[in-house]
Structures are given as structure tokens and as C-alpha cells.
Length: 193
Image 1: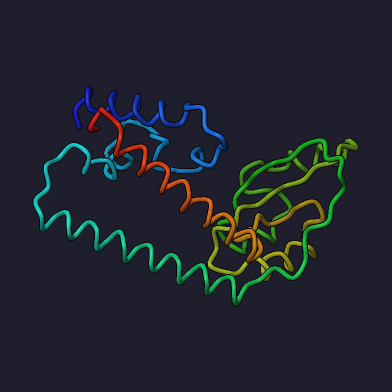
Image 2: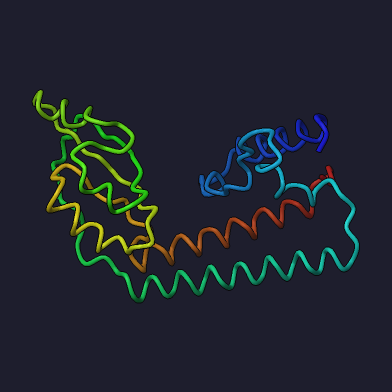
């Protein structure tokens, strides 16, 4: 991708993100957020700048459909098997929230946070209300990790990978509606890109 193509990509995605929409659902489309000018991040946009033959387009559509089918099946499986049994309970007045990462369950045995060290504990000792929200990168379901966290860290919770079935379904419906709106707008757009 050339520098001019990168600038065109960024300006086009930014213009879509900054449009005045009736709702803000389009902001949740990660594809519109161009992270940085690096081949790893720009690889998914290559199809916009290269001429593809019929076979390449067909293969791309097949990959897209199979990926979406697998993601949908995975979501359904998780919703059926790993429903959260309870919501996290904590004080309404929290002074400081740290967002950290749980890369391995062995981290739970440590007194200090993997990223922030002893800072959350020190602030809690000073009388501040501290909450450490952990993003679960392990293969274990959130409910299993939450049980371990409750016994070890009183001021930590796991950010769930999934919401309730109703919330997940509502999000899915909203994303499909937003995709239809963007496709409809693309058909009348004068700029082919």
C-alpha cells in the first residue's frame, strides 16, 4: 500500500466514523478504525487496492462466510455452555479503575498485578476504592476464573467475554442493521472507493 492509498483509506474511514448518524453503532465497526501504517494492520485492507480476479474474489467471499459461520457457532456454543450465573457486585463509588490483562491463571497467585504491580494495593491501603478489571486472555471460561479471583483478590473482577444471551443477540442485530445501512450508502456513493 502506498502512502497516498493509506491517506485515502484513513480519510475515508474517518469520514464514515465522523458522520452524523442517528445512532453510534458504526463506531463499533473495528474495520473502520485504521490502527497504524504497518503491514500487519493494513493487510485486511489490501483487497481495496488490488485488482482481484473472479477466483480470488470467490475465495475471499468463501473465507468471509466460513469465518462468520464459525464465529456464530462459537458464540452460540459459549452462550449455551458458559452463561454467567451472577453479576459482579461492588460499590457504586469507585475512585480508580485499572484495566489489566489475565494472560495465565498463574498470575492469580501473585499479590501484585501483572501490569500495574503494587499500585492498586498501595492506593487501596491509602483508603481509595480501587477496582482492577481483568481481561481474560486464558482459555478458561470467565466463571471459573472469577471463582479463583474472589478467593485471592477482593478488588478484582473479570471482564466477561460475553454478555447475557439477550444482550449478545441485540448487539448482533444492531451490527447487521448497521452493515445493511453502510451497504445501502455505498451503492449511492459517488466515490467508488
